[in-house]
Image (tube, rainbow, N blue to C red):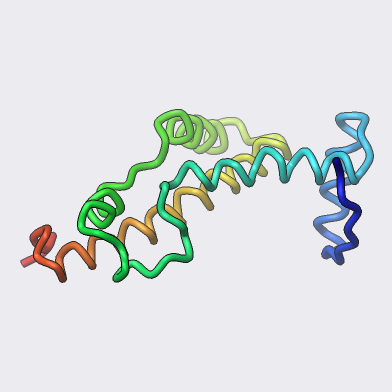
Length: 131
């Protein structure tokens, strides 16, 4: 089942989607739908903990898990590959997009991890990283 929606996008995004569509012989709606289907599930891999949840409301076990959060190994490896290739040979448009997504996942994970670590220290579950 699909649902039809209408959205306003910046011209630069539309141009990128059009180029990707031309390169893959797909129309804009297919490119956008496929992209969302690929990207959105990756954010659920960050943690079982809801990104919008209040850290202070989490259990001690959830706080420890959050404070120890790491990027999925496969994603971390691909991030490194793309960074190295970007420095050495340059990236295709699709690879630049993939790198952007992986960097976003990494940054969100680091923010959540920082919040978990701060709460763990506040609760006395972990010692501060710096004296």
